[in-house]
Image (cartoon, rainbow, N blue to C red; front, side, top):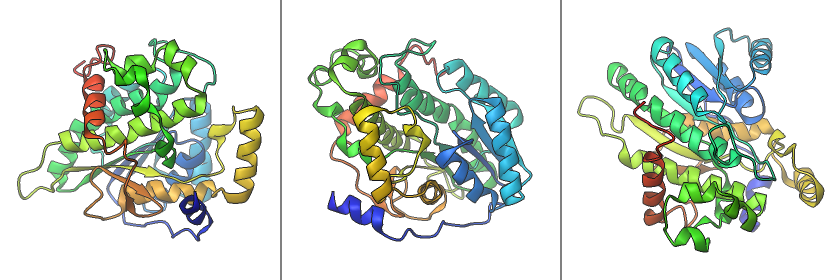
Length: 330
């Protein structure tokens, strides 16, 4: 807790800046909060295209207008992406294969904190688990071939950023007795009503953030290396902690938790712009420890012990890539 208070109270480092001329960037959850502020920073670096993935067309187009007014950047595009629908994820990727050309930076930022009650998507998965972990992971994985091609054709290192949180330190997934039994697919277990009955909604959120770290590490391990003279690794995958920020993600929280969050925000919260600097750092900073790394407050940091559990990471990866509902080869 003392380190958390020091980090939150310290003066935040300025945003990392590089020249993105000629490059293409995709940011999901881009119409508000951390995603929108990250887009504002990226827009000042002059990418050839900035694709803003948003669920709602009206809100996405309003965000593009606001971005243009505040930065003068004119090459932002709205692309529809609803992580509560695997069909929407695949539609985005199919469109990218036809219209997207190269892809240099992918920031998987979209997510939710709730719902507090058990709800499922049209795909039959618990909404929190699908939107925070499974769908973003699928989205990133399906875009990997385009990013590998970009790295090869342009002799660059591409980047995937999976936004996590320091709340993954509070995850209880690895200690859950039913999941530890190892019977069946752990993601199916986490999507079931029994898991929701035995864990509170904060714990469930924290568990999805741990899964994001595990996915980042596993994806980096499974990516191919590149022969000379191409960059190796061709894709750097990282997972940033944006810190505790004023956030619309908590807009649906009520009761005692909402009162606690309000006090915490008044005392310690970063602005959303300050938190967005962490997403940009993970996307642009040069650090030999960045591949597969967890970043926090502008440095590559050590994640939780559970995140470093290779057996848990491997189990998650196998459960994910063999989900029949996802049908990765589709």
